[in-house]
Image 1 (tube, one colour):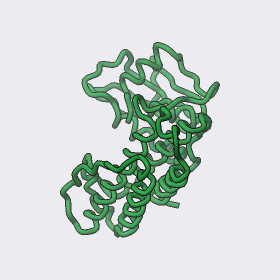
Image 2 (image 1 turned 45 degrees about the vertical axis):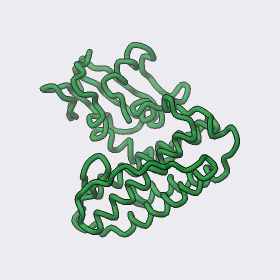
Image 3 (image 1 turned 90 degrees about the vertical axis):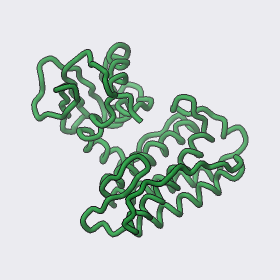
Length: 243
């Protein structure tokens, strides 16, 4: 199963959950600051529409990025809006010939199709988790999503670093259990991955589930993360605020 297939599966799982929502569930808070379940679902329907348009443009060799696609339907019609957006995205993703890794004009930047596929996995893997966590408070990331994001931490973590934030440390080590450690160094005003550990370093360790959720700003499972909960955690999320 490739990354786009995993992403569409996660989006499909969200769609199935949303189909059963009603009443006060829409106003339930999520772990995303200031967002309710309704706001989360509106966001997903909007980005799925815009991303579907991006893949359609890639198929037609159009490089202009898609514009905003706000979802203005009533709450009662949100499930239907998500159905339409999900189907549009799936058709568009499957219609792109990936020979040569063609460019896809995603809403924020033009990126290779392989990168666009990872961004879909990231988006819907986390938002499926966000929705389930809001509804049941016991969600976990899907194994395929967790494995992929863990494997690419060395690329994705520097990408979310806050600009112009001088760090209180020069080295950070991220150590998911039973996985390769990621070593980050502050060099020439930017965070970069290295292949060598440093003696003076902050370390974020624990289960892959806990590490990935911490790094990208989601609630961590109890007892699975080894990091100082106050000063270091606050400083880390200042440096890497995440999506």
